[in-house]
Length: 404
Ligand SMILES: Cc1ncc(COP(=O)(O)O)c(C=O)c1O
Image 1 (cartoon, rainbow, N blue to C red):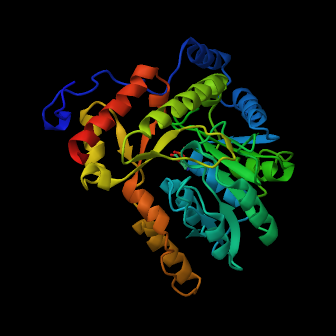
Image 2 (image 1 turned 180 degrees about the horizontal axis):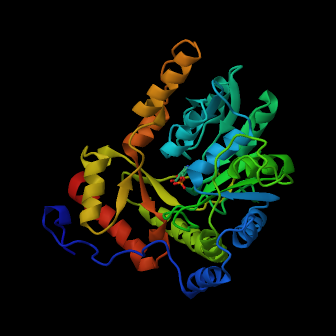
């Protein structure tokens, strides 16, 4: 094989693409047409959405599901249902999509950021406990990339300090912690069905819970403040409309039937890839937590060590991988604790409430992840052995060229 890197004008390791996402077939087509022809495009509680809520909840060992417009709204709904309000503090992770922290700020709460663990990039429970104050109302872990956060420790903390525990499971459909599905391990769990997610209807979200009371409160927040038993124009809470459309419910019901098979394939391919990639000096697939009994692999995460690549930065590596035909990406670029809109809005809320200014929460492990963390999208794990070998071949080629 040619040694010259594709980025330097050599032949790329791979020219074929990887599977596109989302995936669908005749079943989605039929479900959409059936909804169209039923004339039932909006019938709260809609029959497709209602059926999906139950199916998704049952799949995740939860008693109740309340669907909503998207994963960002789902977090907001759960926070509102939990009564999280102006000036309350919510402890969350700095290594996540902005929606996790933005949802807190949108209900007037202040996100506090506990650092993450190097082996999972998920919340470190020890750091969480250090941040608990009389203002703390909730803990909001994210199961990042499909790997559950330490729900044993977080559940203990929530219980000990009487806090609401909400899982942001936007990236972890079907993941398992200690042989139990995530989503209802805390008080509520929120999911996203946005186009890139492992179960998708383009947009969409759901809140899962085992508590009838939380479910009813979520339902009310999603349904302009109505109560399940109340009259149509009776609004017992002040809330907006976050309902999911029937079209999405119909598509999601079909998508859910593929989740197990696709997840099993991702898990098997991730194991193969992790072993092969570990042979490349300077690349370390994340070991994860042994209590993660099923990683949903929304993303396949890797640590990058610049020293093994002649000191070149992660961005140089991902560019070189891209040129070789492998879409490997840097993770989130900076901890949310430092993101300007988050910092400013947090300061604004504190100021409006007459609270003293607060320093940015230090998160050194997250800083490192933002500098050296990388990932591959889940679609690359829905392929065959040769496709996975290409990833390792490209990485090894670059390492040989730069690392000597
Ligand atoms: C961790 C996390 N939380 C929340 C969201 C928000 O979901 P949505 O895009 O459906 O609003 C996403 C997805 O984009 C996410 O990855």
